[in-house]
Length: 341
Image (cartoon, rainbow, N blue to C red; front, side):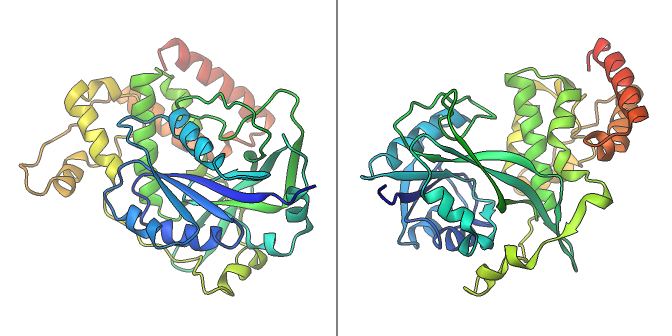
């Protein structure tokens, strides 16, 4: 079997905070890195151009559309001749460094065409002293030994690679996928506020469902938080790549997008979303320092606030509830759905 060329495909929109680290790490295992930039304004393009393995392509789209960016990335990858292993990662995702020594990597390279590759996806976080991860890890299919299959994606929460019915799946256990979303908690919170608003406008998903889905990475029980194993980062450290520090911001581009949603649709439309612990007037001043500061009063009723309190309190146990908790959550959530949640 011909040894495949290894191609990483990555969409980018304002990822300068982590893109250099991502490209350094990915360059250790990928022969080509295709970056589809969607009009970044933070220097992401300039960072990408510094790496010899990067092919920078334009994504001129104005709207959020995973299907379109995946189509663009896959088409560009297929311009590269020969057998192809395609790995679709976001800029805040890293293979654990034990890919350098694990026999699983060789298994990937020798997988037959049409095989999809699934990694355990772990959320990594840091504070001033500790570098930890959430031990509750779900399988995440991001690899594909290309056989030319069509890719039927979706606008949001799309499979990243073609998933042909009956396709062989290679599930990895030693090599994991580290998700650095929580390294900058403020950034992650900003992003999930935007996601909730976007889905409220475009998909009309229930507020209860949105809360449970998007707050998984922020609410792990203490017993599931473990120190990051040394073998996950040692290989990168030996290459001079810092894997533990992070530069945090005071506001993010998603904040401006949400403020625009408020101005266009009003705040009442979003009152049941878990976005109101944020001082939006202060954020407006940070995002638009040259403009008079606007006020965005919290539109929630007392009952809305009570529901959000209950969701925060129960979220850490939601993924692994006891038998009594399961019944409690089911009853309360059934009642909330009747009330429009």
